[in-house]
Length: 297
Image (tube, rainbow, N blue to C red; front, side, top):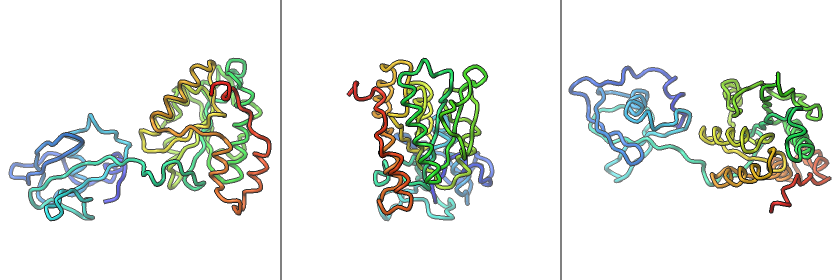
């Protein structure tokens, strides 16, 4: 069976109730280090098995994460992916396995699988955020690159009634969504819905303010949903350099990719023969401002 988030698996419908009548088929449901015996009706399929896993382990599962159900195969002496169309007909052992990012794709960026997130680059932050002018300049460079490469952009504004709109230097022409928010993370229902409309999204390039608050919380939520996150260090900052640098260090240690604007743009074109390479090259001819990062290396 193909892996999918548990919420999507349940939305697929079917399967009947979770409880099994007496005389049901015994099944050992395994997750992580746990193994819990139960039973399901003869002929129970994928949806009912997912519901059963949720009834047994729901408080330990991230509903938005992708999982695969596996069956213990005696002939192989190990678990194998649940065969397509599988139904329970005899005593068996199943396990639910959370999927990790494949090492072969870790860090790769391609335009069809990437979305840019621009977080809270607003007027009222101008006097407070360290190197805000540099951050604006690099952010605008990233948005120009997104337009050239046809990459969707999602923009949020934190409490714009009090903190103002996105600064005028940031050109929002062609962005997919501009959304006001009060939550620190950008991961709002409207943002999740927008992501769901974009097929094949695997990576988010994230930049804006503040590094240790909205950027950090957004990154951690996205990773929890199975999305790889690239934080653009030269396009994100905080009121305090201490908060900024410790946040970047913490995020890097969790497996989030901390990178630079030039690295992102060149990775997205990947080849000097790319039809948009010259336009991207023109963007990066002048080096991006270092925004205080080199003084902390």
